[in-house]
Length: 315
Image (cartoon, rainbow, N blue to C red; front, top):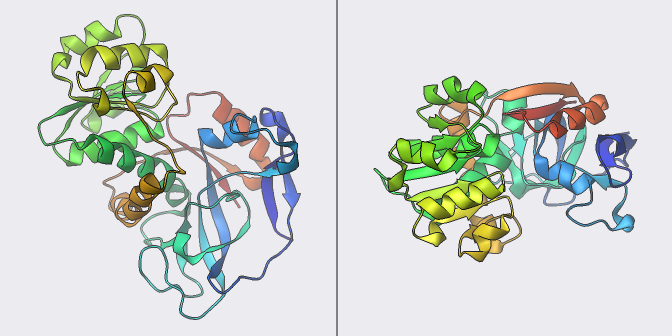
């Protein structure tokens, strides 16, 4: 029988377990995928902790939203993926966005299946789309223009890196906050890193930060809120993905999934993000790999908060 990662109760890594799930036949618009890799994201840990709803009836709660694998079953012979390409048995694919993606087998809608280029490993492919589509959504809201400057809080994290790389492709200057241990690799990407912590506003200003046109908050800290509001005069050009109430209350924009317009932006961005990742033009590093059976250990690593890249389960 297939297996899936679940939270058996609401809590930390100790609540994570692997359970057997019933095998399913695909419906007429569905695809069966033999999962080779599935990514973890902070939202998975928040859901497991009950921070996105703690209904006991939802337990055991399946986790994950993105994976990569091989098509092993089709509900019909004329199915087309989310990239507009017909799906065939044996195709290597990326699956996003589907709840419960941390499993060794998935039955998913064809529209959420996109073809994986051969040059893109399963482990990397599994972790591109949640962070990539979030970044694309943020940049669509900001409408940055060539020559403008954006401040990215938490630029060493996966979403921050994606925002920065996509913005740099458009000729935008990127200043980003990060732990100094990541500064060298961030500079190699074209980012201008600054250390977070006391004195951040002055350090950004010393880089010419008075000309910051927009900001993206991926961390939700008071510091990120205060510095963004001090530097960006047009509040609607501050985006938070971290539910920063100070930014929202001041007129900034909170983005997330579940909004139809935002979901449409994210869905439309998926094929190009996969293409960029395969071409090496969007680099989201995989910093830890665990077997599916070690999901609890993977969640414990994620809980450390300093992954600076993707954590992947390999089935």
